[in-house]
Length: 258
Length: 258
DNA sequence: CTGATCTGTCCGAATATTCCGGACGATCTC
DNA sequence: GAGATCGTCCGGAATATTCGGACAGATCAG
Image (cartoon, rainbow over all chains, first blue to last red; front, side):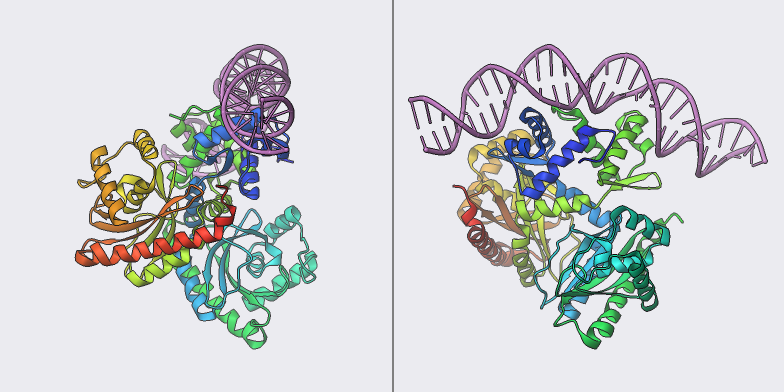
C-alpha cells in the first residue's frame, strides 16, 4: 500500500493525515479499523500530531489543523508564485465571465494553484490544491506540450493515460498528435476530456527555473463554442499567459541560476 | 527543543519541514548543520518525504511540495469554513476599500483564514495561514471576549501576553478591561497594538460547534480615525460578522451535535 | 589538468524507539 | 444500571531508526 521508504514511521503519520483529510476527520477507533493498526499505536500517532499542532482534537474526533494552511500558502506562493499570478487571473475572469485557473506541474500531475471567478462562472469542479492527470485537462496538455519529450515519456510511464470520459486521450499517439497541434497553435483546447459538458482553453507559462504552468479558462460547452471557443478565448488566454510569463521572469529572473 | 511526544521520528520530520519552509528550501548539508543531525539521517528523512510527495528535490535543494496546498485548502474550508465567508469579506473590502480578514482561533492563537482586498488596501503584513497572538490584534481581542473565562485563563497561561508595541496589552487586568469594553460594545478596536501605524476594527463570529472567529477591517491610522473609526467601521464589521454567523449557522446548523 | 574539498547517496551493525497486548476509567446505549 | 464502546496509559519484546564510514560525482583553486 504505502510506498517503500526509509522511514516507515513518517509514512504512517502521513497516511493517517491523508485518511483524516479524505474522511473529513476521524476518531482513534475509526483509524484503527480503516488502517488496520492497533489503537494504542494509532493513539501514539494522533497524540504526537496533536502536540505538534498538526491535528486538533474535538471530543475524540481528530481533524487537520490550520498549520497545514501555513505550509500550503507557502508552497502556493513561494514555490508556484500564485500570488503574483492571481491579479491576472482575476482580470481574465472579469473579461470572460468564466472560471480561470493557474495550473502548475508537480510530480507529473497538474495542481490547481490559483483561481479567478468570473460573473457567469459555474460551480467549479476543482479547488485550490486539487490534482488532475495532465492529459485530461487543457492546462495539462499545454504543459505536456511545453515539457521536453523525455519528461513526457517519464510521466506517461509513471501515471499512464487514464480514461475519464469518452473523449479522453488514452494513447501515446493521440497525445503526440495533440502536442504537435498545440505547439503549432500556441494553445490547447479541451472538449469534455476530463468532465462531460466542460470545455476549456489553455496556454502555457514556462520559466527558466523549471516551473511549467498554464493559464486555463473553463466553462460549459453551450457558452464556449464556435469562433469564440476556437479563436477569441485562445487569444485571451495566450495573452494572459504571456503577460504572466514575462512578469514572473522579470520579477524572479535575477535569482535564476542558469 | 522539540516537544516531548510519543513518536520522535514524526516530530523530527515536521521539524525538517518547518525549517525548510522558514528558510525557503534547504539542502541535506544545510539541514545537517542547522538541526545538528548526521547527514545520513537527514537523507533518510528527505528521501522519505520526497517519495511521499511532500518535498520536491530540485538539484539537491529540497522544498515543500504543493501537497501541503491540498491539506491546507481542506483545513481552510472544511475546518474554518473560509470558502463560505470569503464573498462577505470581498463585499466589506469593496465597501471600505481596506483589507478585511477572517480570523479563527486555533490552539490559543489567531489564524488568518480568509482575506478580502479593497481598492485602497496597503500591502498586508500577514497572509493566509499566518498566526498571531490573540491579544495583539482586533480580531483576536474580539475572540478572547467571546471565549469563556477559563479558556482565556488557559490561553494566557500557555502563551503569555507578549509585547509587540508600546500599546500592546501586557497584563491580565488590562485584558479584562478590554474584554468588558468589547463585550458591551460588540466590537473590538486596535490602535497600533500589533504593528505601529496600523489600526483595525473587529467583531466576533461564534458557532455552536466550537468555532471562534472574527471579521476584522485593517488599515493605516491616517485613514481609520475619528467617527469613521469608532462608529461607522465597527457597525460595518459587526454587520458582516452577524451576517456570516447567521449564514454559517444555517448552512452547518443541521450537523451540530449539540 | 589535477588534487582537494565540497556535495549527495548508500550500507550495515548497534541500539534506542516503535509497536502492541492488555488493563484501566470514562462515556454512551439500551 | 448493566453492557458495550471508546480513548488513554503502561512496559516489555521486537523492530525500525540511527549514524559512522565509504563511495562517487560535482565544484573549485591553483
